[in-house]
Length: 401
Image (cartoon, rainbow, N blue to C red; front, top):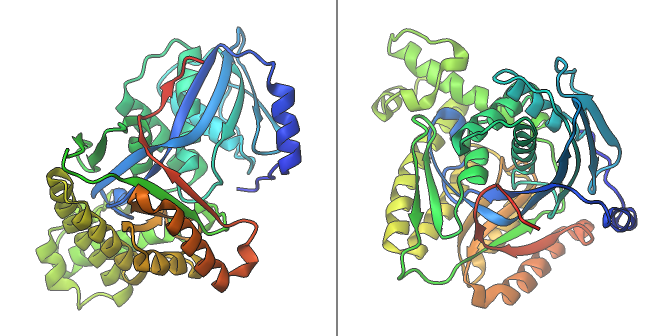
């Protein structure tokens, strides 16, 4: 997306000017992290995740007409459109997410009332699914303004559809599910094929844990990265397996690795180009890691859970082939530091951030040593590299200010 960031001074003066604005409703839509289940939701795999206590805030007042007026405390410009009109062509700015939410909702409901809103994010963009958090906030706000009641999984599906069909990112439902369904005292375990999920509560014997977020200093748009290409490569691997075993081919958009047994992959992996075999290897090995990780989490074995998250990142590098030099450097440093149980790239892994499950007693040492080693390799990011520590939190919700 072609976004213009506010300068720090502009952002502060903007906040001061907005402090006296009164809004009827406030939605907090959290960012998310996924310790296991990387790059498999679009192939209907198994995933895990947390909502975290940083995210997007949307303050809004329903209008009596159909106009939407939005302002951002993070990006330049104003967004105005008619919620009752047919969807507009994407404009390549931050307002496309609001237009996408309108697009997906209007496929199901009649929308008559717009909103006046102000939106703000609490962390740098990159790897925490800020786009999904924003979309869910808009879906909830537009639904509230139009007296539409939505269940959490309906919000997930509508927001995911908006991102796929309007914004143009061929994702699954991992991001939206973590953001809408997360609970602060448990791990989300989601089957992206059946949409069945459960929250696995923390084992009382599990040691203390927080989540480290290490921003490389780079930001990126998934739509312009290799994200959509990797989705196509996974589907092509599935097509190859079907063809090599003389099975009928499905429509490409309806072809998923989850539908093909691992035994079929073992029979055909040497027949297909290595690129596609590696994508499939990541999917099947990640499926196994998620299963093992759920068992580890249930038993309170955070060391094993963390190791599996590290293993997931290794597969992301070598089999899925994502990860910028900056992210790979952060990951390598993470593996060497005491107090880090495990971690991986966050999001698609084409810039952005790494996440880690950490022992809170080691926070300061982790921040100091990781910063020192990373900036020795990449001094150009001295002003943009950042370390944050967050905790699991509940999913998107209305807040009583």
